[in-house]
Image (cartoon, rainbow, N blue to C red):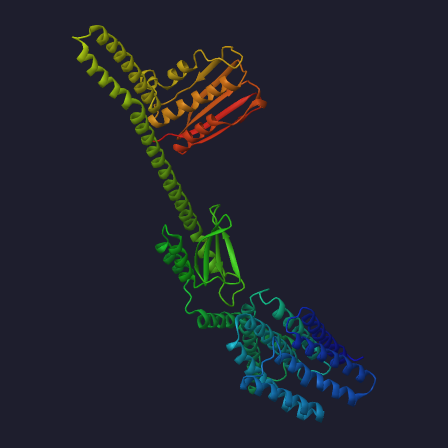
Length: 577
């Protein structure tokens, strides 16, 4: 089998394999069937040529190349024939293929093949313009594969012109083996990569190569015009190197032109960063809109804990993610035609990452402040409700009774002194009870011992006489090295937490001792209460919930549970101004 036959067979098998895959996946089944037929015809054609049946091989080969393969491309990703344009394209391409197969003439095949190619290009462009999004992506995959294969074959053939026995045309023809897999990907996995980026890159690279080749040919022509004589290999290499210097500038200019046509004028990185810094505020939506407008990107979003907290623009298929220093992630959509962020965009986004992270932190802190304020208001209202209830249901009736009793005693003081004396005794007892209730209410708001003794002496007084469940005296050691003056709210919370923790030791522990340590650490007060009791008997209850609530009211934290040597309670309270 000749090299030509091997290459043609590889292309045919690739086309047929992709067609079988489409049929099995139930995607573009008609196109897949036609691709399978075209691949089979191509393989049979090569077998006929090997068997020296050249005429039959030519007929089958033309049926493959001019009829089955073009019809497969027309039917991809689905056949349309109801519209006049679709019907005309189908008739034109199919008719040219039938005539080519019938005549089996190279001249006829060349002319009709050119007509088929022109109709195919115009019709494909028309289909891409009118197709839905998924069908459009499949068509772009097809257009990319056919165009790239044709360009590779053109460059290979052009480069080998005048060189006898060159293998470049055959190597270029192998590029047609990519068409089948590209059609399969376009129908089954159209979002595997951004095909628009591949198209833009292919177009830019092809034009740049054409410019380089044109420069090289121009150099040769100028030297021929100057009658410079025959050029040796070194001179040709120098001319090729000189022409190659035009490749990168041409590519950059062409990419800039394409970018401007697709996306408009793209700002320079420094200007974009300055514009974004000026517009980024505490509102993340405004910040994301500024990023989109400055970088001309279709989509930007902030994601925190896998949840999108803010977004701007239309979500795109291909995105890139940047970490925001632990505060979340910035997700940006790539422009159509881009496979990655360019270096300038990366630099701009890196400059704005700290600002966005600060925005997210400020937003989180604001939410915490609002939540804390809500808890504070709720606690104040709950305390007011409790005081109102205690005054209205407890102290109020008792004082009313005192008033009524005093009126009755005054009425009886002359007529029945003994009864009046009894009422006065009752009056005194009710007054003492009212005073005790008032003291209990005052103690609930703030223990008087804090004002009379201070925090540490008040805790020592409270710990005096503390006994465990076995009736044994508990030795409580309280240390507070260098404790500064504390805000009233922190002082009350610390007193309540420590006394409740010691009460838990007395109720639930068999420990003969307990330790309490108060330390001022930075902007917080740290409380540690521990005992040497049985940690297996540790049970969370109302007391622990109360301690946690008191710590949370001030924005602090509390942890409690069994330790290696017994129970332990640790709280950190912010030192409020």
